[in-house]
Length: 109
Image 1 (tube, rainbow, N blue to C red):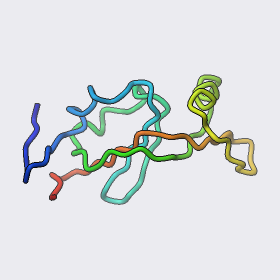
Image 2 (image 1 turned 90 degrees about the vertical axis):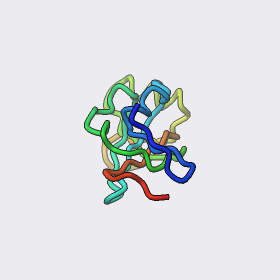
Image 3 (image 1 turned 180 degrees about the vertical axis):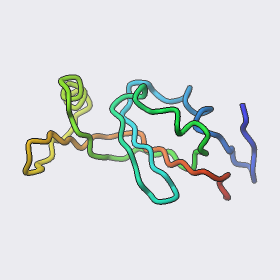
């Protein structure tokens, strides 16, 4: 593991954090640099392009998820998702998710 302790805080890369994430949780990955984000229904969908980024923050929040398959719809119901009226045929759900903020540089505390 390539972790460091900085001012009594753990500095960890996403690849080292992966084993601690529940594989059945919806995830939102936020880029600290520009606050852009991507939502993933299940852990296996999260690409490895984030692996070398540093974990800045982990929280639980609600975010919108687009249901494109029957599996997504079933997960939305199981996780008590709230359907959102988009005025289109899109099926959006507001779901609780694990929100992970990642950055390219070692975080400064």
